[in-house]
Every structure is written in C-alpha cells, then in structure tokens.
Length: 118
Image (cartoon, rainbow, N blue to C red; front, top):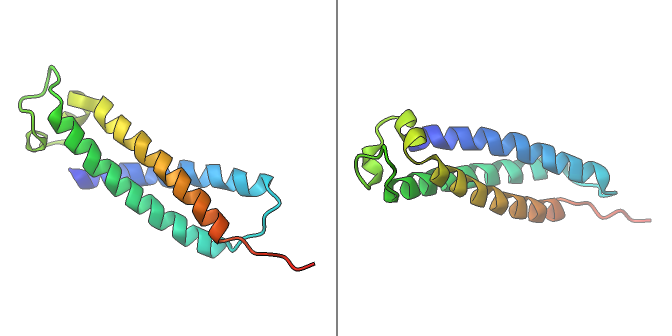
C-alpha cells in the first residue's frame, strides 16, 4: 500500500512542482541547464514522494480515528482504509515533504544555472 501512496504523491509532486518551477524559471532572467534540473527535480520528487508515503502511513497508524481498528500501520490493508481512517496524517506528511521538495528544487535550480559571460 505504501507504493500506491508513493505513486499518488509522485504524480502530484512532479506535476505541481514542475509547474511551480517552470513559472519561477520563466519569471527570472536565469539561464539554466534544463536536462540537469529535470533529472535533479525528478530524483527529488521520487525521494519526497517515498518519504511522504512512508511517513504518512506511519502517522496514520499511530493515530486512532473512529474507523481505525488498530493503532498500527498493518491495520491498513487497502488504500481506501487508509484514506477513510486518518487522511489528515497522510496530507500533513505530504505537505511537509512537498515543502522539502520545493527547498531542494530551489537548490537544484541554482545548481543548474549557467553563468553568461558578457
């Protein structure tokens, strides 16, 4: 089930983070190596999505909601059980990892820039 949450977070991070950084790159007068940034950002999205999925499942397992049968992550046998039991934990973990992804993306953006010689 962690892989299902991972896949969902990766798609969300990659799309929304990509849109965010395309706007940042378009509004700044920065020239950059697009292939390097794309690789770094995709790797960062994978890492952030995996962290968000593991952290979200662990946090959801520790909180006891009204529909949660046990206080551990093994109680969630289906993706729907996780979402109905403690969705707030999954969203909090996703938001924290998205913030880390944005910070890492800014570093990757600076690392991928090209200095123009005048």
